[in-house]
Length: 175
Image 1: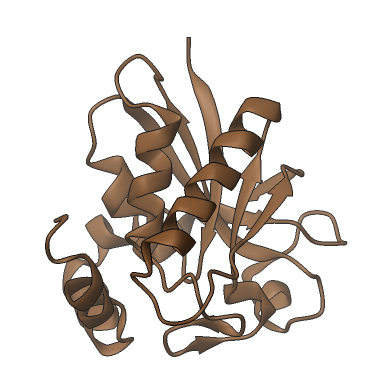
Image 2 (image 1 turned 30 degrees about the vertical axis):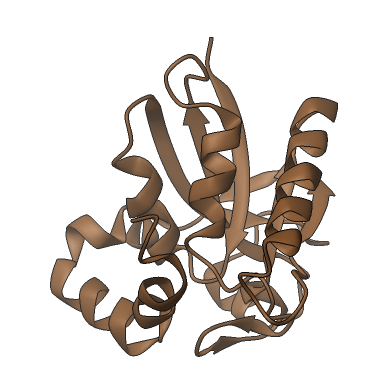
């Protein structure tokens, strides 16, 4: 039985590949959630007027890839201590969040966040919010599976944004 998970981790281009390449992941869609308007566009979300966050909606088989593993992988993609965005992408639309679909996801997300805080991996507290899932709006076709359609630009962006170096610094032993 498939389930869904929604994670906001800054630029959604960088949030697709790490999940899509795992066994048991059926689909990863880039989009927007958590805001005040219906059917927002990329330009509207980036204007910081809608309240939406760039996010990915993951359809997965929990028998093959558990929600706990999704959470672990999510933390390894982001700087969970940054309240102002992710890496060089600044603003509310680039902040991090876990959007839970049920009480079990909420509890697992809260425990995972607590463990990360207690690990002292970061010198600052984890500020990633844990929120109820809201309507997820699929982003424009151009943004879907960007890493596959534009591999060179994607790699340059991931490196240039500071995300890649951050991941290597903090998660080298887990990779």
